[in-house]
Image (cartoon, rainbow over all chains, first blue to last red):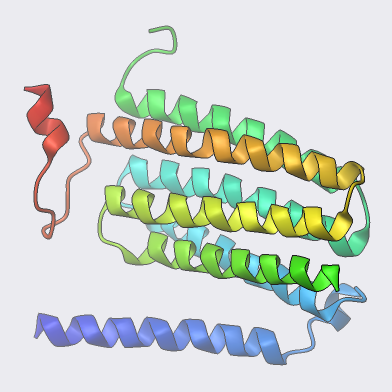
Length: 123
Length: 108
């Protein structure tokens, strides 16, 4: 019984993810964003899908460590998001946001690790 | 022609990011989630920054993206190992399929 339910959930997840990717590849997204590049607007929406998965784990993670890991990985995803965003808009300061966010995410992850370990900040 | 190479790197990075973010939802355990997600997401983000460098060339954006790539490669795995150590100290359990816990044996 448990074996069959495992296969059913696997197939259901595959179906949902392929349906979302199909809708992203068919739907005319570039008219929503008013960019000239239809390829990079689809990249934009696929990274938004990655953010949705991280937010799902951040909401229903059973322990505090799961939430810390999801926040760390979202911080790394935002760096790539800003890098993709700087190509079609042609602005330089998105990369500045990426560098600042990488620094902030590293320090935040170290502070969360100290907090999970149960020590104070000075030992 | 050289923009196509940059777009190919961005597609590769997107595939790795999507696989890592599926793994963070699907896997049963804190440690397996961290192990599967951090490697693929760091590689995918590095590939996307490399595509940005190739498309933008030797300009201010390209140089800043290069610095950001080096910083990500250096700091993200160390932050992940600190998080794994903190998760073990906070008492996160292995799943039922977990085989052994060598770190717990070494602490005794």
